[in-house]
Length: 200
Image 1 (cartoon, rainbow, N blue to C red):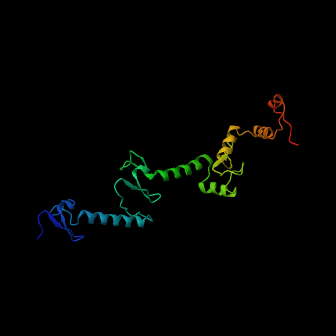
Image 2: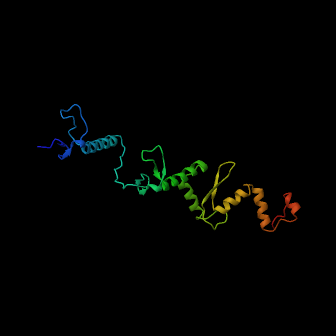
Image 3: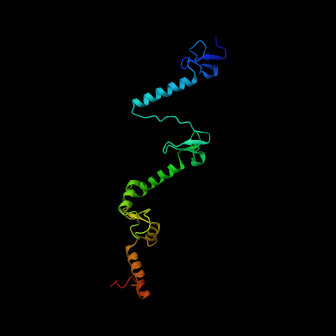
């Protein structure tokens, strides 16, 4: 015979303290016949079956140490320091770790700014041999586009991309700059008027 402070669970057949049972006003003893753990396990299984019937997959519960959190995107358990704060979340942390948010942020930037995906950018870089289209030496890292039409022109290194921007994306200025570097511009007053000697 059980002590008054204990009850036998019909699910797991264990002797469980009364506090381990949820209330049920429809029963004579005022408690559910299964302990809270069994009820939770049954509810989780029932939820999985309902979701499976809808063609959805429910991810398994993962035990996480205190001060850590599982990132559902990369599948890694990381300390709270690796997460951004989110006051609206139940645990006060973002749903994705900082690294995954950064990756998604870059992907979103490419789509918003240039209308391309990371895969499309990587294909462009591969087609360029991995180097900047202009200097053909430094790694291709920055997507370059026509600021007027939005058309993506290629992937450049930081220096070349910044250089085009400094020259205001103007082909006429770039041609004069090329002629200047090649030593073909003469008489500064004439050069200022846009007249320069064509390379021989």
